[in-house]
Amino acid sequence: MNFENSISFAKRLDRTDPLKSFRQKFHLPKLKGKPALYFTGNSLGLQPKATKSYLNQELSDWANLGVEGHFHAKRPWLYYHKFSKKALADLVGAKPIEVVAMNQLTVNLHLLMMSFYQPTQSRYKILTEAGAFPSDQYAFESQLKLHDIHPEDGLLELKPRKGEVILRTEDIIKAIEANRDQLALVIIGAVQYYSGQFFDIKSITEASHRAGAHVGFDLAHAIGNVPLSLHKHEVDFAVWCSYKYLNSGPGGVAGAFVHEKHANKPDLKRLTGWWGHNEKERFKMKKGFIPMPGVDGWQLSNFPVLSGAAHLASLQLFQEAGIKNLRKKSVLLTGFLEYLLTSIEKYNDYFAIITNSNADERGCQLSILMKKNGKKVFMSLTRAAVIADWREPDVIRIAPVPLYNTFEDVFRFVEIFRDTLIRTQ
Ligand SMILES: *Cc1c(COP(=O)(O)O)cnc(C)c1O
Image 1 (cartoon, rainbow, N blue to C red):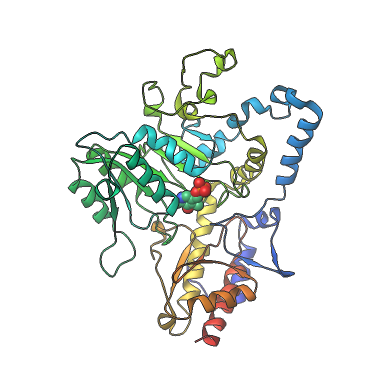
Image 2 (spheres, rainbow, N blue to C red):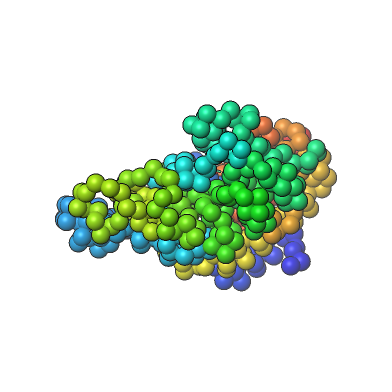
């Protein structure tokens, strides 16, 4: 599309946006009484207006039914993990048997690494992107130590080429092939939280399997942001959280994917709990664990219904909007942001956009590397009621989210940003 640098153009895009009605389904935050420009759906998604009634349903069922709610609540609590399967399967490109809502992201990462990282004397290395999210780094390090492997020996952290920020797919493939005899697991943040790079899941998965390694993806910044095809691409496992693009509230219930090809392997090593046990026998309280087929067999505990209710409220909106339609708008919205930013006079003196310029290789987020006065600019944005995200040492992350952000939001942000740059130089 040929963008134009004007508010009337932004408003025209909003008027013709087929998803425009979704913004009204969210609570839009204020900053000191002023309506905020919100660009941190990559950190905490906004609250759908329907969330309260989903929660109230569970609160009143609990109040009125007590323990009987397990069977007689409007959505019986005993089966609550099943109610999100269809929506989650659509979001990650999976079959319902391959996805489940459970626990928290880092917990799920550990649980699935327990199964899919089974090092041997010769094949024990984990390959990941350098600068992975800290929680993931700690998880990798502790998993290696659990197996008495020194992280410096066992962890391969892939860095971009000198002077580059983005990892090239060809370099990832090369690194996988170079370590083919020692590689046990490749695990990558599908959309990198810092740079915003959307990795080539298909090529990385194929290369990992050719090398004889398992492959997993952390979808924290990918789910609800970009369409995925985990089943088709034969990814072994994936994990995600639900409070970022999935708008399910702070600390909301997370999720996991295990490919169908691993669905019926009771011997696969795993940490177990009663909710992963054959549901027909779950309440017989017998000895001897028999896993549910599919990813359900990795569940440990009974389901967190209250956070699951908030999850369902938001997933319903994704079902209505459709991830493919959202992506279509997202590409335009972020493209518009990029166009306006790079239209700022001498923008190169102030900042560089480090996120991939190819729309297929990024989600909605653009990471802006500030060349001077970054923190000052960021604080000044906050004073102007722009809610953005600061990452030390010098990056401002802006995520226009297609469910609730508008082209006008993007236009107004860039106006404020440009004025701030000029004032703080
Ligand atoms: C947000 C995020 C996390 C957070 O982990 P929790 O277990 O949900 O606290 C972990 N990894 C990545 C890549 C993230 O973006």
